[in-house]
Image (spheres, rainbow, N blue to C red):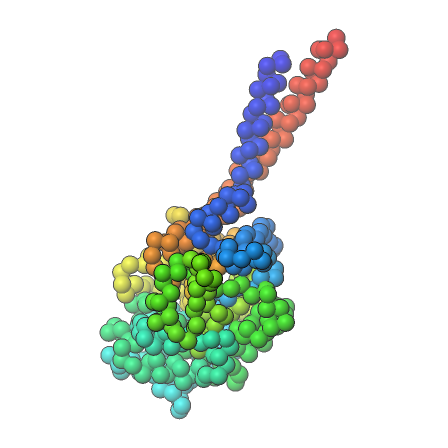
Length: 441
């Protein structure tokens, strides 16, 4: 009987160790981040009702000094990069509900008389807001012009969004030789044009619209989310900095974006530092907030934006995946209106990624939208080398780990584990009772 009791105890220890692996340990996640040269990260897992996991890792800056600020999920302010675009989609659907915007109307009806946008290869084909939101307008890459959009500090406030977009699209090189409709090519300019239209129709800047119509109804304080660095000037230390590993890229960065004043972070450091910057097409990627604040918006998404949208058809329209083909025939990610549908670790997700110099972000929900993961980091993908590939792989690994741990099916399995643990504990108590009784006898 004593041998049986000890076997029960050994099984108990094994089962308990399996349970404790979900979620992954802080040290194991930190090791992943360190291996990919990601100084810090904020990770949050949510269901439709609450945050079920919230953990910060690392620092605002790389190990280049002894005084580094720890990442905090509530106070560390990240620029969201392209996650910012999801706010454009909500704003567009609000304008549709108020009958100010028709997704299939020629955008020039909303832009005239000051601006007129025509596809130079297909001038007789109308461009619509639906094209802009689904990346099917035929707007292409123009690196020379795109690099001009990056500006130091809050200098975007000194530019006119409409003029910037009109100037970009006035170049034939900024267009693809494809008919607008179902060929996708990801465009920051296209989505920013949609934001500009929203602002014109609402009679206010897009920046102001986001605060009045999205952040405020979600009870997000204006000091906790903003496109402007000035908003955080009283707490500048909360802003997560922009660092890029591998100082050998310094000359390349300085040539491509001299206005950003990128420098080597320390005389002997292998890190580059980019002072805080903005973009003249700010709606596409420059909204700043903490992971905790973003989780409020994300849970609203998982609940069909019930406080922001009033028609169930709006969320259906927003998430409908239409027949499409990637222009480069490379990406397997599908687009609905702004929202992306990638396959990560054999799991279909819906959400959005983001990347800027020294920032990599992701906000993804499972297909049922009953579980979501936010990962905000100060990693870097801009170099497109093996280190950037490692950053991307690390983000995908963390996403997969979190979904594997917290999805309903796995929660069921965990509940079964906990039930087994409880049973084994009870058996061990009985065994000790029997063992103790036999000694007393």
